[in-house]
Amino acid sequence: MRVVTNLLPKMVMKQRTMLYLIAFLFVMIGYRS
Image (tube, rainbow, N blue to C red; front, side, top):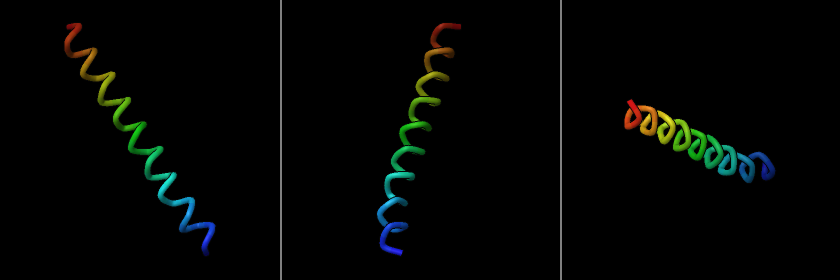
């Protein structure tokens, strides 16, 4: 249980950074066109 609670925040942070990268890519594509 302790390991799972420690891993969850890291997974959330990774997903958040991935979402930021995807959003950044969409913004770049929008500015280019």
